[in-house]
Length: 91
Length: 146
Image (cartoon, rainbow over all chains, first blue to last red; front, side, top):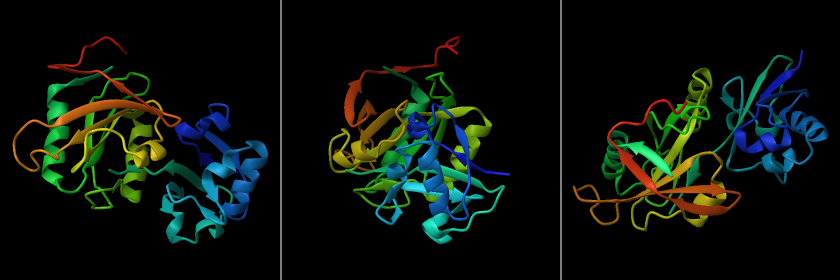
């Protein structure tokens, strides 16, 4: 079994238009490295330095990973990962 | 061009006035690919700030689950500016992440929480490029376009 990753509209240029792709990895960092291998360029849109980008939200089984260890969050086969850009801005 | 019905436009303006001096934010959802803003969905500004807005992270996820279940997308993404004009700021442009959406900006700088006209403008924001578009306010959205 794999890990399903839900891709937001703005990042579907990296997935050939696919709304969801399968990935694997024992942690969120490993999953993103695996995604980068199959969809080059996507990692830079998610990660900055050693952390998730401030305005990218990632959820594992509906839990925001900011509260579960960020890139170190543990993943298991069958987990559902959702990537959503923050809806934000300001004057 | 953004075609929006009067009651939805008025609901966005009312939300902006109610939350002034903080920025108000939300979306209007519609069927995927339809370009019809049908369902007004005001959101919480988790930043609670006069100069910044951000959808609450948990609400954002719940919102998108709902949209996916209904085959909808954000047709309009709106927020207010409370001390500046209704034009996308550099931050707005940098963070715009829905290339298919109409970005609606409302400015409450003139009348705040009180009655009175507000600026209500709509933009496309794609790859950092801002294009203003006409806003057509109608009594009822035209049918048969989906």
